[in-house]
Amino acid sequence: MSSLRDITVIAPHFKRRLSGVTSTVVQLVPEQVRLGRGIVTLGPGLPDSLPKMRWAQLPELWKRPAGGRSRIWHARRNSEMLPGILMRSVLRMPLKLLFTSAAQRNHSRYTKWLIRQMDAVVATSARSGSFLEVPHTVIRHGIDLEVFHPPQDLDDTIGATGLPGRFLVGCFGRVRHQKGTDLFVRAMIELLPQHPDWTAVVCGRVTAEHQVFGDELKRAVAEAGLSDRIRFLGEVDDIKPWYRRLTLYVAPSRNEGFGLTPLEAMASQTAVVASDAGAYAEQIVAGETGAIVPAGNYDALRDAIEPYLADPALAEEHGRKGLEHVRASFALRGEAEALERVYSAMINL
Image (tube, rainbow, N blue to C red; front, side, top):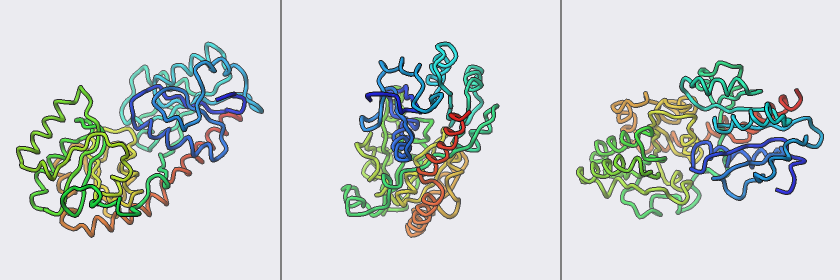
């Protein structure tokens, strides 16, 4: 990045590990650039393809952008709100502060204080907005329909994987209790013996603190004699084709912020069974694009999955309807355009 003269939005990203926020920034920023917004990211953990500013350029934020009175510091974490407050209120940089909140829980006193210092707040769902005590705008996340798309060739089929069976059911994300991976594995152990055409895959990293949890799941699968039909693939290089290879995707999280994986699956023409954690219930049309069950309720999850295993044609039908639904209601451009309206209002204050 040579100059910040034409940059009006800074999107800090102060976390190295991949997260839902990372996925949001990676998908959204290029779309915002296509809309003509001067935006850069700041921080580690992001691909080199994104527009970035250097830490050494922070003093340039004392200068106003070309043709404007201030820039927007668009934070998505506590660790990003606090520096924005310091730069605006202590160092007197011409910044407006925007926070996007995805959390669906009561905020701590510290977080509430940070949020009250913001010039504007966005909630990623009506549910997350219900936990805010300040005026806010609800802007749901969108999905890049060019990146996530329906199957196109043989590489997008179970045949390309070398796995047994005719149909794949999958659960993606970090392997941990919060994500409900154990609920998915338990359901597969119970259901797959009655449905020999199906194979289950778990894609996601097992971090050191959750290694025992992951090992216990693998042990349970082995004891059930299903190690060939319930596969733990770890963190795959590219998750996108795996969505296209699935006939059914399961998102069994006990707790989520927003949660993009059901949208990624539906954009790939895959039916979804999900808990009501995060914004999942606002993404799925129950009975048309998939099913929603109470978070943490194993029996309800198993019973929602079983009809799809018994009738793959139902899963395929709901996958087609899910694609139509995402195209109509969750296109990434819609999210970018809604943020543009917020940015414009803030800059013109």
